[in-house]
Picture 1 (tube, rainbow, N blue to C red):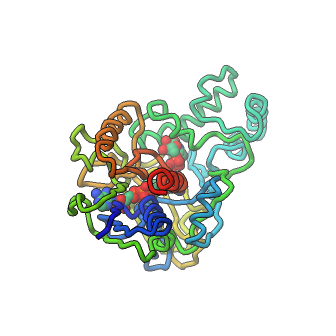
Picture 2: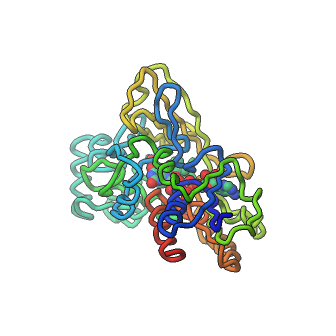
Picture 3: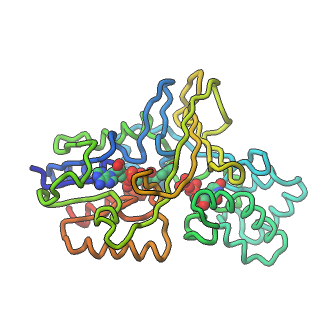
Length: 369
Ligand code: FAD
Ligand code: UDP
């Protein structure tokens, strides 16, 4: 008999299971309806011995030392900075849009003029969300704002969300600001890395505890939840309540995974295609861990709307309407003191892995410590 049920063996569910098993010595049952652990962080070695990130490119990055130290107990790290490219006007340039990109896109004289304007308006090292340029009065700043909006954000965001940049939560596009810097890394966090033997192994190590049992291919709907004293749920809250107030919208993705019969396909791990084609980006997986192989594996990422029974939920779509629907479900959940929602789907929040772990560390301290 297990006192604790955790629904979902992604990074959120795994970390909570480990804390309960280890810190308070309770028996935990972790279930997942997929046939593997690790949720969206899942990776596997393919026939060419390349570690493939099944659900899209995952780079761990954080400024939170507690989170970093916690995960470091379960994995060694391959230190890694993400430096993607974007194809603009047919040319591969560096992304995010930095002073380097400015020089890649424009003539030296024009780049220098705009760089000086950016430096005097904002200063070196400042990150400017794309929508902030709309308030500029200076002609050059207005121009560069419009250029980056049109060439990097507008069409990518239309593909990714089915909406224009100004129609989505501003924190989403602010994840990739114009960076007035020569630092071309996608993230500036103190800790950036990929688990040396992959995410699946790291999460397997987190779950590997005498008090934890993992059951795959098991949906929470198949269990009698009354048998458990505490239920921690990382799935979608609207699904848990049988959509009684309506469906919460999510964005989904389709991955076209291909083996290419040459050593390298592109010159960096991720290339974004903001404007051309129907896909948003191409990931070449061997770059994550610097793996060598005669062939290479790529995945081409096509965004699509989430539809029940057709595809998976990947991104919550945060806006006033959806957040208030989410809160209705959360209020309903409060009727049961022993039921808790968390994780990217359970909280309906666009968490990176570090924020998902940070949330679990807090949740455990609040509820169980
Ligand atoms: P999930 O990984 O979604 O796990 C939830 C689990 O619950 C799933 O395995 C699911 O099968 C299971 N489940 C749901 N309902 C039920 C049910 N009723 N019964 C049984 N099981 C159920 N983060 C970063 O930090 N860096 C990155 O570079 C990065 N890149 C990303 C790229 C993409 C394309 C995506 C989609 C996400 C990316 N993320 C990245 C975010 C990262 O994937 C999430 O932060 C993380 O996976 C959240 O883990 P979770 O455990 O909360 O949720
Ligand atoms: N974005 C964009 N063009 C790009 C990269 C990002 O318009 O080349 C916008 C887009 O709206 C995207 C958001 O910025 O959804 C966040 O990008 P990020 O790379 O963080 O997305 P994720 O890796 O989480 O899918």
